[in-house]
Amino acid sequence: MTASDIKQVILDIIADIDDEADFSGLDASKPLRDQLDLDSMDFLDIVMELRKRYKLQIPEADYPQLATLNSCVTYLGPKLAAI
Figure (cartoon, rainbow, N blue to C red):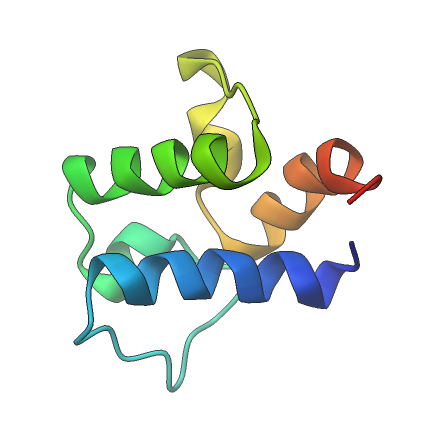
């Protein structure tokens, strides 16, 4: 899975969670929660959807590594490389 694919997966999951999410002007290096007004439950929904779709186990200690689109790519890239 490429970096673009991973970014799209995250955006698709967010769109499923919040159908009013506005991705225009999204900065991949800034926290998603701040830009898209995601709360902690939304964030947990993202993690749970990654688990459901890709059988990924993401420890709570690693959640900060999913803060931005860029950090999602860095963290998830090796885990999704075989997909």
